[in-house]
Length: 192
Image (cartoon, rainbow, N blue to C red; front, top):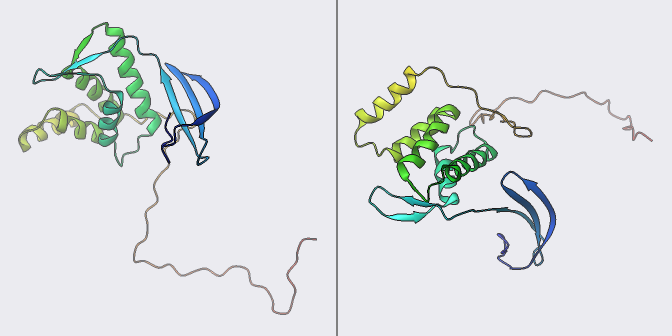
């Protein structure tokens, strides 16, 4: 296992835990001393994905995760939620029992989950997946979303709170409020 920081090949395992669909290992690089996490998952059979242009390639979990992360960029969706979504999709694909799955099914599975999670992320993903050719098709997708009703709240997992963002007051300076004043000549208490 290569260290993601210095690419050294030797590391020691400091912690191992059983998680859904595999094992989570905490590792420490023997050269730089930095720690990183790896996951081991059982892959029953090689799952193939058939593209619309009739090409076939092996299912790539990282590629799917990267696509969902791009759609969820700057949205209040945690990394853990994305990982859970990818785990669920991969498990569903394995349970289907097919050796080959069309990208249409894979894309539909992602959009089905995104529409309930974050509508902006859904539109982003759909715009790439459906390859909107004109503004009218994009407007139809947004209109369909509006007709379906309000967005459901984001699910929060344990230890995964979504923190509100603070806006920076750029160009605005607030005057400081003076703190409690000390009378000159009096020594400060040291608490001893």
